[in-house]
Amino acid sequence: MEGQPPFPDHKEKGGISYIRIFSGIILAFSFLLFLISLSFLFSPVYTGYSNLGGLVYFFVLLYLAIVGYLPVIILVGAMVALYFTFFIIMMRSSIQNKSRSFDNPAVYFALVSSAVLIIELIATIAEEKLGIGIGGGSIDTSIVTNPFLTYVSLIYAPFAEEVGFRIIPIGLLVFFMIYRRSGNIKDSLYGILAPGRMLRKNDISIKTWPFIVMVLATSAVWGYAHVYYGAWDPGKIIPVFIAGIAIAFGYLKFGVYMDILMHWFYNGTLTLVDVYPLTGGIVDTYLIVILIAGVIGIVMLILRFAGFIGGRTSIPEI
Image 1 (cartoon, rainbow, N blue to C red):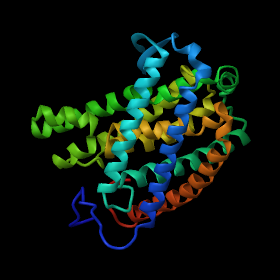
Image 2 (image 1 turned 90 degrees about the vertical axis):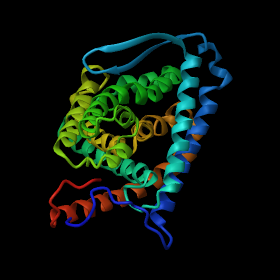
Image 3 (image 1 turned 30 degrees about the vertical axis):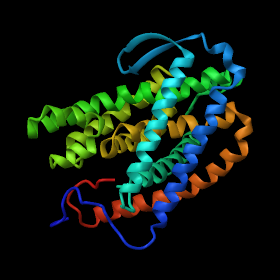
């Protein structure tokens, strides 16, 4: 829109923002589920796994980048520390950011993640009606036969996959764009961890085609990898592709804490009840809340894109 800066300040003030409050509740609820999962991960029942070695790989694109083996207890401890840190960063950033739209980290995390969940569900149902298989049966079996190691692998996946499918390829593009504009190596490197902040500092919009193409390409490769490397059928590609777009934009707008926590939202919260049945009531309540959030998120996305179609001349920043 003419006369509007590409990256507005987003410091709206005045009045009560029910969207921010609702999103904050979902973020707090997610953090609560994370804390509850600790009682499962560090339960005395699973002390026998503490000496097992876990394969540590950072990403799967065309090959595995293998670091080696670590005792599972060390791997889980490191993941827990990082998740805790990312939650604190998101909470702090959300409080400081007064925006009531998707420019606020909590709003983006809560509403976009939930909206994508509903869209994925609709796509999955449509595919099943058309006879397109989704797969995942081996994971369901693994959850029953080996819940601890299965859950560990599910919450490890956000780190392993985000590094390879978003942080490295999209981060390198961010690095190149910033360095080409400023020649500042420090800003360029920091841009890999916090793309949004460094892109704004250097007056670079994510509404440009290099970023759009990279987001679509990495999401497509990520979807295909679930079939090629994972336990899924071709029908899984579309839901994963949709989630990949939302996660990639989250990374571009906010940084590594957003894409890893969004990935954890799908892998860690929605499977907790499968491995830890005692959480059933809490997770059911959580699902009701995020379904409401998903409807709100879809409406907000439709309104945002309706504004774009109605006269904006650039790709909207979601």
